Amino acid sequence: MTSIITRRRFNFGAGAAAAAAPLLGRSALAQSPLGVGFIYVGPIGDYGWSWTHDQGRKALDAHFGSKIKTSFIENVAEGPDAARALRQLAQANNQLIFATSFGFMNPTVQVAKQFPKLKFEHATGYQRADNLATYNARFYEGRAVIGTIAGHMSKSGKAGYIASFPIPEVVMGINAFTLAARKVNPNFTTKVIWASTWYDPAKEADAAKALIDQGCDVISQHTDSPAALQAAEQRGVFAFGQASDMRSFAPKAQLSAIVDDWSGYYVKRVQEAIDGSWKTGDVWGGIKDGFVKLAPYNDAVTPAARAAADAVKEGIVSGKLHPFTGELKDQKGTLRLKAGETAPDEMLAKMDWYVDGVQA
Image (cartoon, rainbow, N blue to C red; front, top):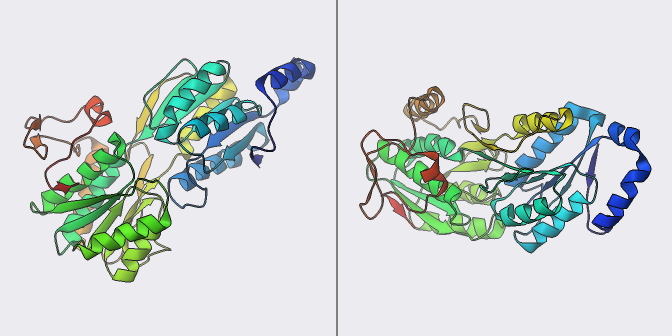
């Protein structure tokens, strides 16, 4: 069962909800479906980040049926608006609420304190509480795979990267992509344009065109619409999809795509909420865990590029390869990792520097 929450439909306060609860009786409450709410930073039709989280919500509906009732609010701005949306979900009888964007972190912490009996989860964040857990995906692993392909496929040795905001999640993706490409071509460079948005098709398309005009013949992105891919298709260059397989929008341009899959995690956490075993914690899953997948390679991907990408993916899954392995220096020549040393999660989660080869 699913509902789309609008702010006009649910305008009662926490006091009204609390007052109504005793009237239902314990047996009625026990038989009620578990309410599971989501807030999304973009529209569910972005075919990127918000779309993939909503696919996870739909997987919950398919798996649990009448045992749960899911609802969502889309296009929630990061900041105070997120707190209002979270309160709305909390007051609408949701017992487990997922906040699915980095900028929702502080509002989620705030609202979780106001509703200590409810369970909250925040994607890509780092602040936790007894009723607030965090979860994330190791997208940088996927970017190491597509960076390897880019290194093989780029004739100019220049890639364009459309980035959203300079948070560690985005920076580590730029770095992982560049490091992998430079293993193939030591002179490879990545030109970054900051879009300052997660979802704005017009901005994303303009950024892609500007990068192509600067000589980039491969486009990657950490924004959510297929617009950049479509621009690449129109200009005859290669590109990579973001968060989902976007090849239907650019069948010639898309070489592959990083595909986010939250379904397994959401099913697991909802089951734990139902059976009473849910606990706070932090989960960071990657390719091995099924959180990150790669879309099928385009036929244009050369055998050498395909084999190299598969080797990177297999190395990551086996644990023999870590995308951030030293010796590693940043743009300024500062040693960040010694030879053979791999980056600890703490370093990745706070990454605010670029590797050599990044032009940003």
